[in-house]
Length: 435
Image (cartoon, rainbow, N blue to C red; front, side, top):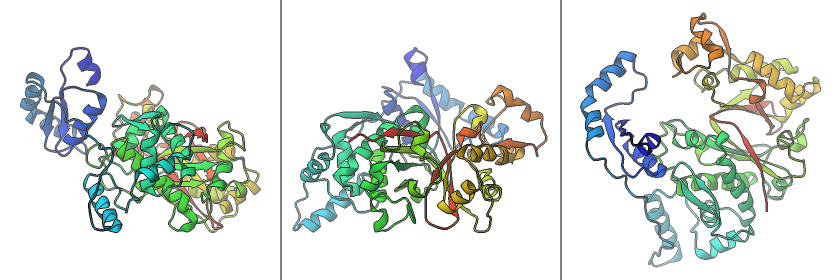
């Protein structure tokens, strides 16, 4: 719409009832001065072609009205105050009132927030050498200015320490790389969440858990929890990823509260992930990945690489995930979190990470019928080299990625053969953490 409107062509958006606020917020974030929309009663998903035709035909008058009347102005972004005062009897009462006030305004994640007082924010800023007014990036989807100070404010609320600030700044920068696909992550009707993996010396310095329960609760994962939580609050309060406004998640996931760990480099038989990405082992990095689903990969019996990876391949061939996006030229890639026990079995068999990726590419396959009948893919949207599938039998096996290197591997976890597989809606981005 932005493209057409800027070229003098009137447009109208066909918006399902319940998605008006997302559309208006997206229009505001995209800089549209005025917007026209026609509201249909239900989404056009899960309808037959005839159902789509009937729904659109029934709303033609709204479409025509949207094209011919004066468009409405989208609401302005909410003005934010520098400070808030809560005149109550005690500091604890002020803490409770602040939390109620912030939650009512949508600025919290539902857990108690640490009050971001000027003193606490100033202390948080000591973790970096940059000025609080420096703009790190313009954070999508709401196009908010991610200043160092705003990142610090959300870091305080999440319970972070000043030494966590370099990680947060690097992660925010990485999320704006196009291949990370932040708009799909932030605005989807699915439970997408940023997954962070920290590598290099800083992981030990910050006590980021890479072993047992690295994505779970407890004191051993304190740094993991608060760093991941801060990223979610930054997405909300800087990127305007608010539920029902730009975040249109259908069911949700606890992954959206916090999802951060370190790679278990000490127990990995291979080079660390960040070394694969071209960094030295001594460089500290953070990898951000737009995860979709988190699936456990349990195999407590196998003792050969082929049989361990057979379980991974079966897990990856999940018809309900976006395993078809590569067929329309979208690089939506998965991440394998291999437990040390599984990694040892695979490496002891003489297998490299390259071997793992080749195996997964050739064995993690799904019958064409699942994509043909269960996805939004069409012949017109499919890349030319694979249009032949529409004339193939339903049981034709199709790869779940375009090439072996789309599988990403990190060694994580405790001493039992339980790994994990993350489907994704983009590609991982790894950047250096600069103090």
